[in-house]
Amino acid sequence: MLDFLKQLIKYASAAMVGGVVDYGLLILLVEAAGMHYLLASLISLISAMIVQYVLNIRFVFHTSDEHRIRKLMIYIIMGLIGLGLNQLIIYLVVSKVKYHYIVGKIAASAIGGIYNFFSRKLYLEHS
Image 1 (cartoon, rainbow, N blue to C red):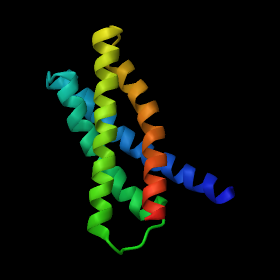
Image 2: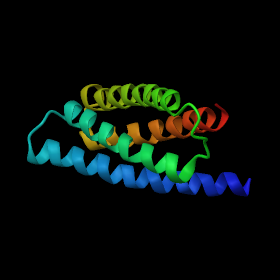
Image 3: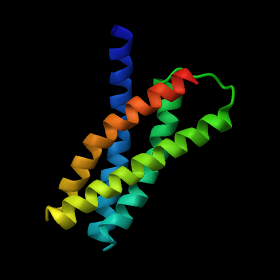
Image 4: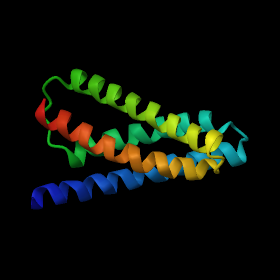
């Protein structure tokens, strides 16, 4: 249990770094560049996913170098599922509930964070 908690703390730390990239770039693209919130969210989340991938592989999940390309491809597929979930939640919160895009992003981050941790933990450590 202690190992799991340590891993969860490392994951949360990597997620916070990714979150800074994600939210910072999202706000910059929407507010400063005038980009549509869904396109900006797509770009910012992909950027954050790249940062988090590097941090997760290096510091969080214990995985061997065997089948590195296969693992990367599965990681990308899991990320695309998370990306779709993120976009759907933001769209629904903004378009249907009529809240600000940042509120949608917060909701998407909470739900997506849970999905991302467990899907990556199950795959990366057991493949």
